[in-house]
Length: 214
Image 1: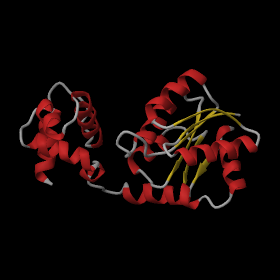
Image 2 (image 1 turned 45 degrees about the horizontal axis):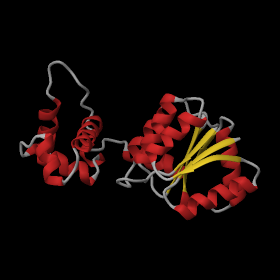
Image 3 (image 1 turned 180 degrees about the horizontal axis):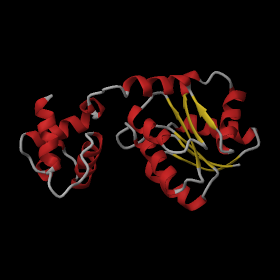
């Protein structure tokens, strides 16, 4: 099986690579950030991508968002998310479609190397490997949850400045962020608040209204 690994910790990345190589699997590339992961998957078209959730630059959910993108663009590539945390929104999105070739394991709960290798092979062969805690948290927190709770601390900062009437440029200047970074945060805010683009509604105003009404 041809595998790509995305993990920002150098030691952990090397450890997983060695472990899988010793088990007879082929690690074609091991990278440390989500952007390089997407480029690597496009170039190598592996059987499986093992992805950490929190990677540079913000160490929030870049890896999991990349995993969702991989499943969308290359559905034939299996994805195994390996994380210390359960990111409910993107985990739910990852599991919303076909679950063949999808896994989500919590690092602290991987207690046996042979079981981990078995999970890797199962996902790579089109099966599923889900930590019960992942499933439990997704189900528990999806019930009537306030969408604002899904925002990251940085997104809340951006939305708070939007509520003050600041433009994207002014938000970026205040937070020392590039225009493209602000745009990405704003787009993520709209998505998490379930504000798709329409001809009638102004999403920026609606987002601010939700913030002020919280």
